[in-house]
Structures are given as structure tokens and as C-alpha cells.
Amino acid sequence: MGWSYTRADNLIEEENIVRHEFTFVGENISCTVLDMVKVGNVYYQAVERINKSGERYVFCGVVLTAHNNSDPRFNFGVKTMSEEEGPYYYDCPVKIMKMLSAPEDEGSKEWRKTVCEIRLNKNSLATKIRKAKIPGATILFEKPLRFSNGKEATRFVYRGVVTGMFGKKNHIYDSDNGITSDISSCLNKIPFEIVG
Image (cartoon, rainbow, N blue to C red; front, side, top):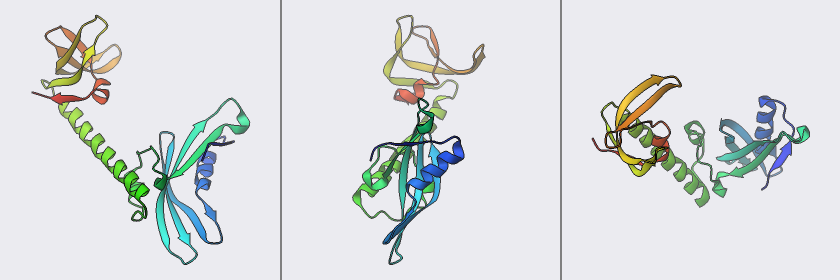
């Protein structure tokens, strides 16, 4: 399904539009959004589906959102997907995941498995980053970091947090090249190991 645009003047209107995407009552089935959480520009919804025999199933609805300020009449866009379609959006909060029924199809199973794997990887990266930020820790990056003076290095020692003119920075030091640098963004983007 493609993008649909409408008008939304505030967050409450946006949430109502998003909630409406998976809410409907039909002759054989009805769907109600039980809860939803926004992560970035994506809403993850726990959607309850009840068929005419009363069977209940809760699945994850994924609604992408976008703002378009070029036309105020159509300034808010949505694109809907269900978990069974295997959307490439995996930041579904635990709160929503816990509300879902056991998956009925392979697409939902695979999507939920990927959500859980990515969450585990993020948690392990956060732990690794905390360990790397211990003064004296030796950090070995998988790829060399290149600096404006043309030098590059892979092995650094974490010095600690230094407060300077631009706020607090996590400083590392490369004794071979005499390079001191802030590693805040590097730890999230470049694979590394703690080697000492």
C-alpha cells in the first residue's frame, strides 16, 4: 500500500489519523487499536482483530508517518503495514510486543524474531560501549579512523570525559600518532573490540 496524505494540525490529530488506519468494523471482522507507541516517525500498534465467531487475535500494525509542509491541506502522510508483511522497521517496543498473540503466519514469526534479535544486539552494543568508556580501556576499531591531518589509527586508549568549550566529550588517545579525539559517534557506527 502506498502513502496517503491528509491534514493534521497537531499531535492529537496525527495520533487519531494513525489510530484510524487499523480501526474498522465489518460484517465478518472488526479491528481495534489497543495501544500504540511512536518511535521516530513510526507508530507500532497492538491491533485486536475479532472475527464473527468471536476469535481474538492481536497483531502488530506498523504505520510510517511523514510531514509535507509544501501543501497545508495535505501536510501529514501515513503508510500502513502489518507485521505479516515483514516491514523493514524493527524498533517495536517491548510494551507492544508483549500484547501480541502467538503469531499465525511465517511473516509475523520472522518479523518478531528480527525485532528481538536487533533489540539484543542493541543491548549488547550499549553494554560494550559502557565498558569502552572506562578510563584506561584499550579500544581496537575494525576500520581505521581517519583524521583531518591525514593520519589514521585503529587502537586507542579511552581517557575519560573532558569538558571543553563545546561541552562534554568522550576522549580517546592514540599514542603512536599523538591523536586525541572524541569517540561519541564512532562507537555507534564502527565495529570495535575492547582489548585491554
